[in-house]
Image (cartoon, rainbow, N blue to C red; front, side):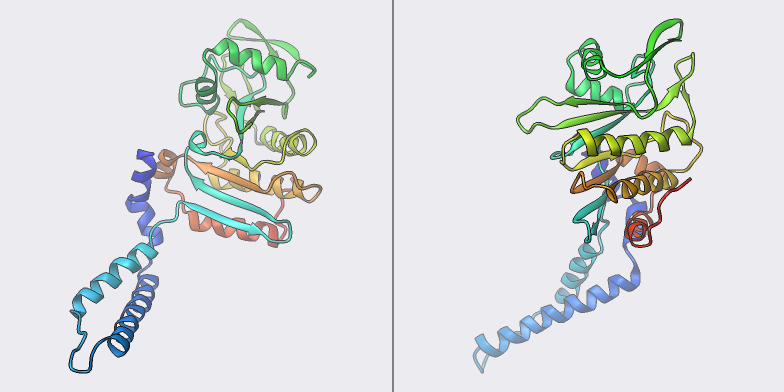
Length: 296
């Protein structure tokens, strides 16, 4: 939460949101409304021998404060696909601080978490919902017991490897019955490091949407920008967002399996990489309207 507050008050966020022209228009509009209200009070509720004359500088200052608030950074942007009754969002937030949605957790093909640092999404997921790593491994094994696999070695240790796009569906504890879809979106080499391959990510996303459509529930979906971290992909984050969105839009042409897709950007990543949410919102608005789908 502290990082999100820091992101809201960052120079980067205000630089994009506080447009001088828009601020001036808001200021004039607010000043006009306030002054009209003052004139209304003076005409109907003030006696003829009295007058209502507030300090004009106070009115101007109040208008400036209100217009500045109206121009504040919006760290959550929503676009409605009216013809499908589906909402797409981009939200500067921690995926684990969001409620009322199924979580999409990126993983490797072996669903290994021993070789990954504590900031990785899958490790945060494990630590948040499981009291120890062995219980997480057990939940993964139970979810994948009927999925074909092969045995490989990572750091000299034999592990199971599943096909790209394999999904382990795990029910999360709690009364609201939330679900997590742990997605095999990349491979590890023999040293336990991610092997960058954009085609693997594309295949994984297509498989994910198909899986949710056929076997998942219809709750809102929450997904991080997969591939922007430990998969070591060379594509920038805007292209990764476009890949997630385009494969999702292609999937909902066949069936509707959710009412909302939320792409999350960590506040820390937002500050470090200086995302322009206006550009992302524009893309979300245009991607479905002009059928900008990824066919490669």
